[in-house]
Length: 283
Image (tube, one colour):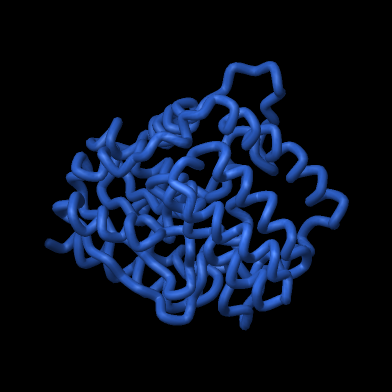
């Protein structure tokens, strides 16, 4: 590879790298060799079945296997949302494999993220005059006895009450939406049915509900946290934890983005990524 390699890890669990590739491949390809994958069992990758032994660490080992396949000594890793969680775990287990770690609107702790998502869901339910559900959502978010898997499932339930407005939880800037017409709607439905198995197996295993905040102090490589002004996923508690524990860390804030700056401020995002890795390579 002539350019420095950059691995992209999508969120979810169970989303795809399609939107990142759509907005960022052409913008970044002059500076990086982009390796964007649908994680094992997701969308265009080979399916996992419900009886298969599959868990969180398999995704980490898949990253290492891909690095070795391309005969790379090391690479930079960019993880979005759950991909940020996966990136932190990967970096804590294989620090020598990673030159730079970039975390776009990540979660480090699913309980903290679910509480924050429920609070934003509550505000949107109020906006759409679903007052009783808004009150219930806020009460759940503030209940310290509810956590982990139960809290995440309740968030899924209450966010569904927003119906066609659900994506307002995540997306703020809709000026340049992803064009998904590469596949038909029927094909996307088929691909995401596959992804649901991936998510269900990770949820049943339960490892994704372990907080990675204690692992942040193990990040020794240059690490950039990318936040969005309107993003509820990386809650303030998690941002504070990053500031406290990541010794070689920096933060960049996107003022006109929700959860996906790589979509919502695509040109700006590419510029920030390029400058950060370029500057750190030159030190």
